[in-house]
Image 1: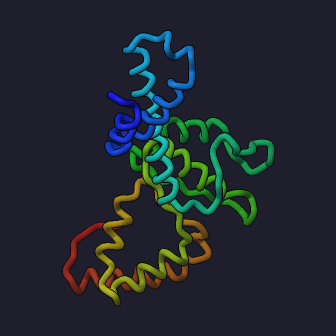
Image 2: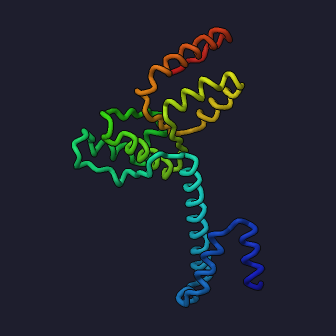
Image 3: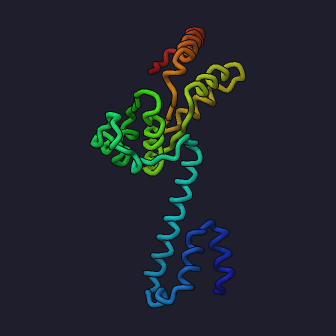
Length: 198
């Protein structure tokens, strides 16, 4: 088989990682010394890594994190009351997400609450969970407007599919939340809904 048609077929099958690895192997004289199985294994590994990186990139894009943060960049030298062992436990394969635990990051303005929340969400994305960042005021506004335009069900469905929902500036928007909660209660009573909420 000629190389160019083979590369075109790999690209048509969306095996872009394999195409890149094949081109790299063609330019590397040491690759010619490898057996077929070893060369093929390298192609498969490259394709796997390419696909994982594409998926991570998509999860990060969908997360819309406000801060480009990662847990490896958390500064423990500043006196903020961060317990390194707690952060390590939370970042261990993001197990807290799998067990459906909630995290509240509390502290005065400017201590890095948003950074820490975004870092934990970014780690969850790296551990193959979905995440989404929103400000509380924006979320409450969307929830308040959704019943009017009939999009409440789709909004709640979309939010329920997210593994990690980062809600920033929660306290600042608390009074709006109370109004929405009261409106939600009255809607549930009107429908006779018995669903529980937290």
